[in-house]
Image (cartoon, rainbow, N blue to C red; front, side):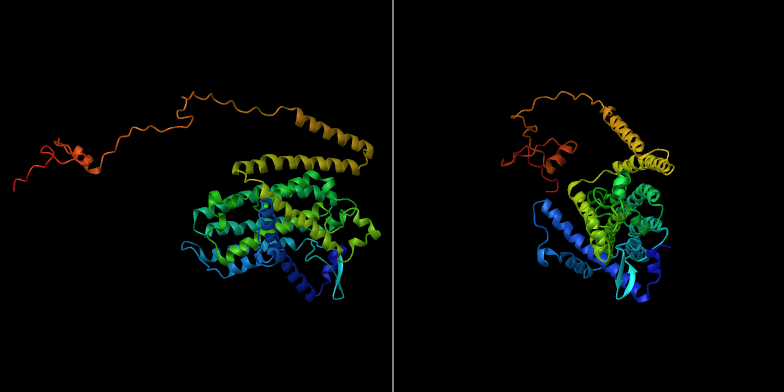
Length: 444
């Protein structure tokens, strides 16, 4: 049992309650601030101010929107399955809270005279808890789509299920290289292993795979296929309103905060101060409450990347998204894990010195770059020759044919369709002649 686990095991009940309430409040506040920052940043990117009415700089706009949703009418579709329809938002939001509980926000601190670690739960298999929580979260989306009794939410839910299955594998494979270098599945142990060097520099491809997978896991642009407004109206939560819709909204942004915090923990040193700040005062900036500041800064950076991607990239097609997951990320991750395992084994066995290892690694990188640049790309498919077109009249603009023929009226159509009728109706403004007058009735 490491030091973090011992500190958490000795926490009294009142301290556990404080940490639980503090974690929930932190996630809710981060959600409100992320929504506000997202709207402001996207507004600036589109040369408009964004929300600026509710509070200073519009910072209370997210709170106002939440209160508005709370007072809206709760409408339930007639064909919906009542209890599953109600429980689906809760099932979607709960796993995000569970996943964040194993992430260390800081080191050893003292709260009301009681020493503790800024982490809610410390487990030897914390990364497996994160993967399990991410897998369970999609059940809320699938249940919401199925219980709504509508085709569009069901299609969005099926898309989300396929998306999570595809990118959960890539995310798990990106964890394996981190586990090989850290030698543990514990999140606090992984942070401690990065004290002298972040895994972002040692495992760049694993970080790239995780960065792509975390965007796909959270259904964010450009991977927001379950919520494609142009195809599925509103996605899996089309039939939801009021607080149930707010819970789905909360779950999405809590997931964003959780995967951003996990990226900080796995690849950016967790709560450790960045270089060269950790050199100041023999590591004094890695003690006390200072680590919370570094952790927040790194997490906010990843949240900004989420906003940046949404503002700049269009949505991928469904086939492009699946091809990226199954044909690119998963095979390359398997090759990368084999390479990392071989390199780790060679270094541990002292078969090669540091200089020889660098030469071999550099040669492999150069060879891969040469293959990537020298192998010709796939030729584009040959296009069929277009048929020659007649020149356009009217100065190059297409002009529809104008025969100036007035269509027949319904009365003319009936008369012409009557067999044996040869009489002709008078033109507009013309008096009826004897040939066009109707014959008198024989009864007169």
